[in-house]
Length: 287
Ligand code: HPA
Image 1: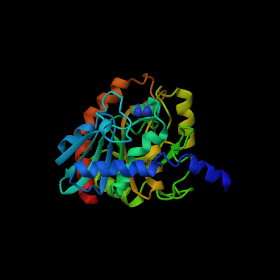
Image 2 (image 1 turned 60 degrees about the vertical axis):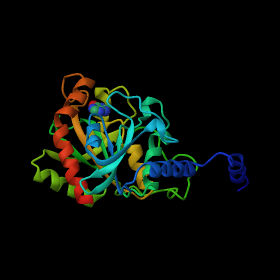
Image 3 (image 1 turned 30 degrees about the vertical axis):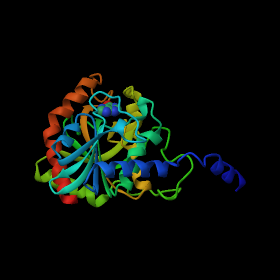
């Protein structure tokens, strides 16, 4: 008990993460009129979706108090608040990755802010390598579950009950009804849509074939370097989560070609129009 008090008084003048998230949410509210109930994190190559929002206001991450700055190629680094059809939405054009050197607290801080802005449903998108030769580059995968192989958890540290419980349940991290809804919408569009388990490693190097063999043995279908910290933090705050991966390449050793970052980007671009249309439909259903 006394050590807890010592810790709290030592940090009495430093705003808590909750207060910092509240400040950022206030700042965003003062700039944008829409009150988003849905948010989307746009992975590599998908950022253009945010340019289609109407009545939009965009804020560079570097303008938002408490946000870190995106450094990765293909990530614009801004938050766009607007409407997709009728639905008020917040779109993150680019995300923060652990491999860029950010702490997982920085990586997931925007998700905290989105929750305080009133967002109830979070759509996480990413590019992923396939461990399953049936999931070919260009196909989409709705995430059914994840395996955290990053070796860290974004909830490590003091827990703030205002966000959520110390030991949150992750039994249905990716909302089962929403998974079915995404599959229905994709099927209506004739999309090659799969459902599978996403494993997250830190990157930034792609995996070795032996690592991919291990990850496949563990039960994953796809592998990537994002999404899992954000999903954990979103569930901590009881948000509904949808995860959709764009399969951009076969993972190391699954084919005999090396993994090439330019293929990851090019495949993302090839399916972008289809992926964007799917997102529009999914968001319309959420509204
Ligand atoms: N491995 C890890 N992350 C990725 C991959 C991959 O093969 N493709 C796209 N993101």
